[in-house]
Image (tube, rainbow, N blue to C red; front, top):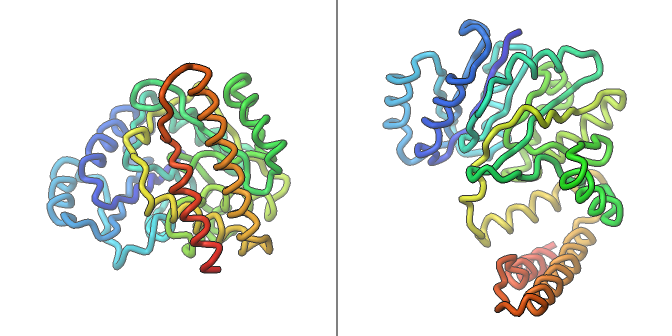
Length: 296
């Protein structure tokens, strides 16, 4: 029951120590069966971070990437160096809160399971989205299904939804057969792309969600950034182009969705007699989308 955990860092020194601390605290595998590889994507203070990790976690293999080729490319470096037949992809801002390695590996050993993940909680204990509608699921199916599956049923429908990429487990051999991470995707949209390729390469295989195996993802600390939003739309657009679909149609659809959400939030503020705050940043998002449409 061997496992290789891959963690990609980029200026993540504030996160990686707590991440590793929780990983080893809740590790339920024999030490010889657990391999941890940290791949650093050219952080500013790599040498200091490496020295601390080598001192406090000598079993961890720390590798400096030759360049910052993005999240997927960094993970591929770690996967190619890994020795175990099972892989866990873990964000540095993830914290384990219970043992789960043994059970996840047991599920991966089932004949028809390609990939699995647990339930994602925020640092405040609130439930985060652990899965999302695939890009190819029509919105009139995807949105109601997300509401029912996440908020009412807590059930994952793998044919129409993909698992969060913050922390997931996958068979290494299968991952290699679909080409690992697509390195043309610098950041974001990786998990939807992986789900799509698994479904089309191995249609009989399934992805599984286990809501009793929970972990913390400190994503609520992230603030709106036009740079990051632009990267999300670029990566999503690439996915559509790659699979023979229209990126422009997707971007235009996002503009309509942003406008609809903006009207909804304004109406809600009016009903509640509260001042309207554009926390969704609809105008900024649409400005970015209009720019991408012009550029392409």
